[in-house]
Image 1: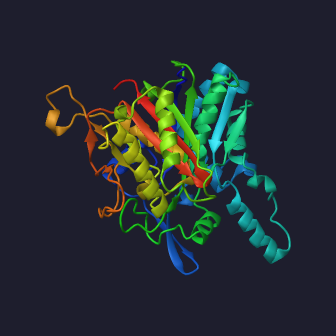
Image 2: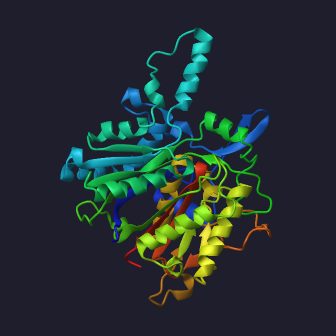
Image 3: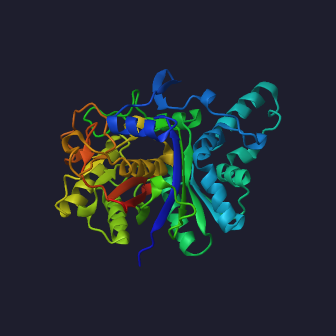
Length: 416
């Protein structure tokens, strides 16, 4: 039985811009956001961090940290939709499902530094900042939501996992509407952690290139308002016809950080999403890759993509990693890249070649790299800046995390 989830509204904030038109322009033309460099043991590490000065303070002092300021900047665009949902269904029937990996380490590291210097923690500091549910509690408090609350910390798949949880709870009637998404920042503790794993590049990430040297981190907050039935009272014009129809999960159980080298786990997640949606791989018009720019990820994901779509004689499906543009936004990445798929589905426009016909083109998220394809990887069709597609009814978004936690989501454009 198919169990789709209908998208009523969504909003995002990342390094590519503060409004969707600007984000789409950067996304499809391969315009990288401004990366900030951090000195890590004498090596400069770039990260796509949003200038904290551009983020307004949170009115509730208890919740005023950088993570929640970023969330506030993102959900401000859908605040009316969230309030309508609370009014229509009741505060106790709205659920919150978020993905986040690092919500309070920045405040705790500052507090520890203060403690070492003074022998006491700063006034107002509480360990609650480190709680996994802290960013979700902020949203619940802001909108008076008393329904169920769930936060996933499954590394890079966190917010993709949140969508699976939201779908399951909507269909279990534990809530009537769900706020789903993710928020994460490239805090110093996270930068230091990835540097210790020797996974970070000393320049912006270069996925699927023979010259790649690791990943780059980034900031993002992304929120969706979803229901299990179409809801005319909530659905915005930009989301008409958009629904998530495929949810696929798998677990490698192969290594604590490295993905399974043959791509089997990634393949199984994508296959499960297709089966859940009742689709064949040949129907997918675009795939947003996990694409971290690490040697292990690029190798296994290209194998999985080549295998899945090659089986369907659809090996030329357009694919791209958008992490070269935004940095790897960790717990927010799954939701961010699903939002990018939605933006692409909304980008239908007349091209210069067919202004006098009824045909339209869709803009595709670009794959930004140095153009030096790794000859050791199975070939995939990497989207060039400005590339378009005639058909974009179905998009797939992949999130493959530490511990072999793999999630693949498929969104449908009902107006295509």
